Amino acid sequence: MRRNRWGTAAAAVAAAIAIAGCGRAADEGGTAARTTEATAQDALALDPTTPPATGDVDAITWATYRPVQTIDPIQAFDYPDNTAVTLLCESLLRQHPDGSIGDGLATASHPDDTTLVLEIKEGATFWDGSPVTAEDAVYSLKRNMDERLAGFYGSVFARVESIEATGEREVTIRLEQPDTWLEGELSQMPGVVVQKAYAERQGKRFGTPAGGTMCTGAMKLDAWTGGDALVAVRNDDYWGERPSSVGRVELRGVPDDANLTNGLLTGEIDGTYLAGPLATADQLKASGEVTLYEGPSYATDALVVSAAEGPLADVRVRQALSKAIDRRAYIASAYKGTALLPRTLANPGTWGYGRDVFQADWDRLPEPELDVEAGRRLVEGAGATGQTITIGMTEEIPNLATVAQVVRTAAEAIGLKVKLKAVSAANYINFFVDPKAWSSVDAFPTVNYPDYADPAAFYATFALPGGSQNYSGYENPRVTELLEEARTTADPQRRAELVAEAGDVLAEELPWIPIVAPATVLIMSNEITGAPASFSYMGAPWADTIGAKG
Image (cartoon, rainbow, N blue to C red):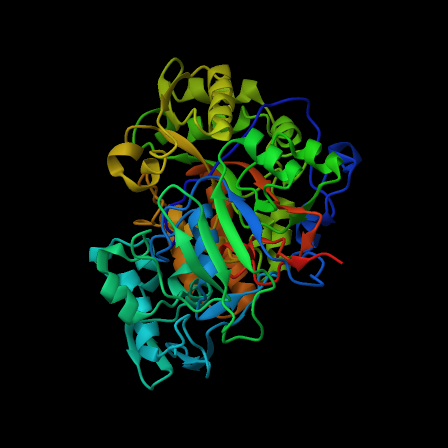
């Protein structure tokens, strides 16, 4: 259901204290001021917004952990690329900072449980002033399904029978069976609308620096050359309620923590959403130059298991490795307290419905505890003592290099041998998209997330047969049955029960190994405000509301 993701994870392990703060701006006291037993309720209580802006700003520079590689929505599958697409483009439906889904470029209605009608809003236009038509929307949706384009969202439309323009501004989607997941996906990359004529004219150049894009957002593409910054400027003819409060946004790839920290402190960089932990977070908090905000997150810091055979293909070895990871120390040192111990593979921020059901399930599950001796016994019982596992990593992204060492330390403590396979930062993506790459290792780290606030949207990517991130060939008939039934179930409480049960099985069998459940961390200059603090920035416009702080 979800495309691949190559994220970052980890920093050094130190003394154990935990966990997350209480929302809004992070307090200046750092982790010492936090409670030691934060709960899922704390994560849900985090404020998804920042104080509203009071005026315009001429220009901001925004950092992503690497340069943008594509602005084609069907190819956008990682933090920098999603951040660029949501800066420029809009989807048919829109996810709000609190995780709810509402109108975007269109309004949705359901004549029956296998029909979805999308009515494009009157007056919606592209940057060139031409109207958004049903033909543009149909073309954009069907691009996801075109195998020749090799997009990451084809499985999103698995239950779609037809997509047709049934009026100048009306799109009708007919389903083979009910699909409660589809609207969530239409509020994200699969639902982004691009201009058909422009995309066809650009051909293979579309979404690249050579071809650009034609979208509808309040910011429009101004300049972009491969490897350099992407620049957007305000679309003064924006069709929506009001133009952006920002005149110019420069997206700049900054992979090095030291350069990111220095840029934030000197004002060269105005803001960033962290894709993983930042070792200098406490330094930034104490500087007085920036504000760190914590918001609800969909992300899970995890170890992707890609092994179809060997030690990690044995559930006992995966459980053993999980037991040997010192998560409390990791949270304290790497995340500076802005993360939870994961009782399931899905972050509590994904509970966009049925929260009481998911909360009760979470409360029943044990916290993962450090127990190296128990892990060693499991490895011995599996006959895996002395066997080697290979971890994919890169020395060029410090967080990935460090988490690989964290996993290595845990694995060696339980009697395994570890080989680290280092690649360049540019090639790390291949572990997610190239079968030869992911089959050459047994596991690799990620900070991974679903498109929208639903644990099922995450589980389906790695737990269903054929899932976009199911690299090991994991299959459990009961998990498949539960998720497929949930996809068809309209009642949110019953749907939550089904998904929670599937999550319990996954928490036991560990097709991926969760490390922590981080908060969304947004860092902004004290001169600006207004950006959403929640994970919604990955699928919805985030810069439109940024402006001057009063």
